[in-house]
Image (cartoon, rainbow, N blue to C red; front, side, top):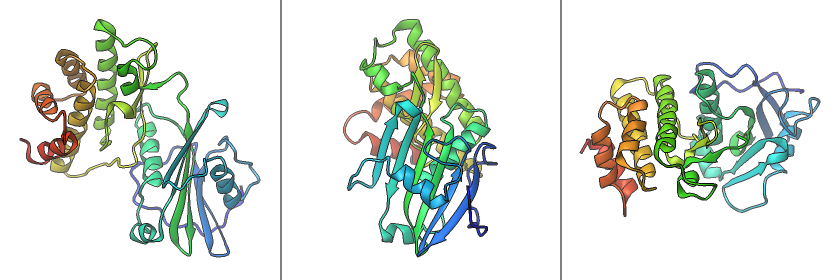
Length: 286
């Protein structure tokens, strides 16, 4: 892929180092438009001879035409999941020098992979700037074949709902992956049943959809983010009528040092305003 030599300086990165399969940034400017692309050699839709602008446009063309800020498309035949964002000028001005949304999610997924936490592989991500202002971003990641998000599975929308020992084994597997993520210093900040993809036949668990992920350096912030992740996860699992004992086993596997208290407060937060009450407990510890 051809690229201009003047690459933008790297934004604040979550990952300790970029995945070896992803190279970049490849940057090309033309007519007030600049595209910065991070891509692996076998990325879907990307011709090895394409410029960053051509590669970006090829991915964007695959997304549905919509007025919404966020656009997604699943392409099973290419085992790829596409996401795109179109942002306003005011948003671009506010976040011109920081990673937000898709750019932050790509960095988080690469960090998870580097830490050995199961997560979709990043094929490509890129940002388009107009006169230096971020306007559009794209992300192409691996489609987890045979996977279903935990929330859908627990609702019984795909196959039978796991029961008894099968359910507990699955939730323990979930807890172990969450514990590995936290042990690597990465906090999801929107950890819920719908943001964990599982393969029920093998109990494989993958972390997805992490555009808000953060690696905190100070101990108080780290403790807050970890507690927030676990409380939100417990709340979304309890919402599916899962027994406290199974949730306790999941939290134990995740390394929660007070699972009974987490369950008690997660249950108290169910119902109207549950997201707000969860945030209050996470901040005040009440």
